[in-house]
Image (cartoon, rainbow, N blue to C red):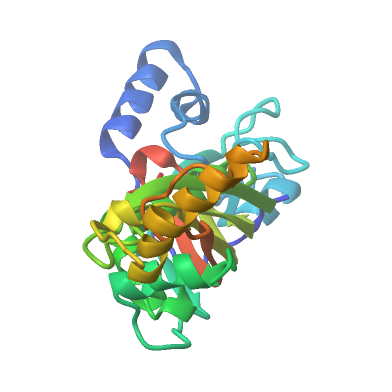
Length: 297
């Protein structure tokens, strides 16, 4: 149940037009002001106000100055619900400098930056062994490129949207997209980056306090040296493929044996290999529960 004395960290706003409308309804029809205000419900929370005289019920006097949520009434009910209650509900407009900060961890490289030739060399000599992006010396730059203002804002909005669905509890979601990293290293090019975030949300007086963790991943594959415009020719193999093996296949055919295989014309073969990595992050922030008033989500 949300009930607490008004704290210094929040500001209150009373809409004069709302009260003018309520007062006119009271003069014309005798409608209690508190009911008019409640029906408008311009905010998710309100401040309980009594008339301050000796006619106020003790249980209502205790509520005076406290903040309540419209969807979580106190034991006395909302102002005006009890017969003859003259208490009013002042709209409570929380004020907060919204923010969602994202911090990354474990994005350091473990080696010198690979050139396109290094990626091709591993294709031919690595026997298909996968490599991490940090091993190629490009993780920190790729992560920096990934965390542009556009991606950061998208992650912040995603966090805010999911957190509002779980205003007092745990929340999580996954994300994934393809990003062009040819400006960092052509051999990686268009790569898939995604992840998952988990967090906790605490709602109080229309403000959500958030905290949580990120798990990021990158998945790519180096499958064809032609993608980087490099052709590797082994001259020793060229001699074998164009002279020795054709002669060997001719002799095998003479004795009824199958040929050794298609002629490769000296192109050195290799094995595709995966390029992957993992890194972590955390987030924290405060946002307004009301999406219409928030800059996130």
